[in-house]
Image (cartoon, rainbow, N blue to C red; front, side):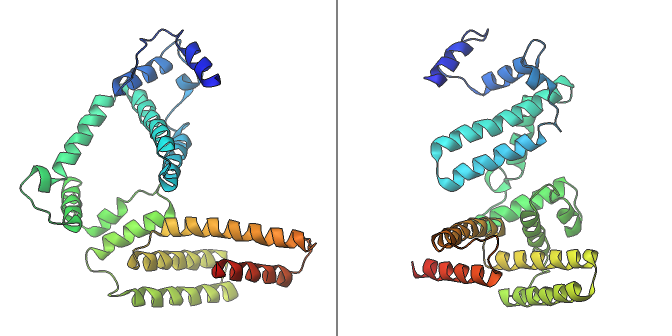
Length: 279
């Protein structure tokens, strides 16, 4: 009922009422919201002020994908699209570009980077299609070396995701292990170097070696065909679930976790771990 009442209130606004709105309506509504007399909040926003909103909305859409919630995905994709519309409207106001320019650039990019569909190239499988895409991308961006291609990977990406993309680019020119064994050996090597840094080095060296260890762990996940970002995401969920069970056990046995010995809590952890494996 609250949503219906809210929608009825919106009908009082001066905008054509339709049974169904489309993309052009979204662009126009955002323009009205930011125009004089529009919404004070929308009018005050800049690219920087809503930067985190863009990231948040994207992750909420990802969560809808992960949970298989189609209705939520529809809503969250709309929120992502709103961010696109807001950022584009800011540039339209500045006389830089508008939504038609954004769509024009995207369409041209899709056509040019799919020569196996719109041109004279061929691609019998997914791998060949990606090779075509990368080759065109490097040519258009005038990247003459793989280092330039690696530097083009966005620094704003989550670190695990950026690491994997950088590794994939270096692997394309043969700079890679033959098997996962080489990646595992490197992981052990970095682990030992971190131990030395902890025993004898300062914070800067420890941070560097920890970074190397994490980077090597991503390399192992790449060889295994596992998304390192998702693997760590799932590990967080598993940790929370296991911790919850430890907390419940401690409560049932009258154990105060804040004052208990670590060995006692570790024993509860192992007990929960065994129970989970049995299931």
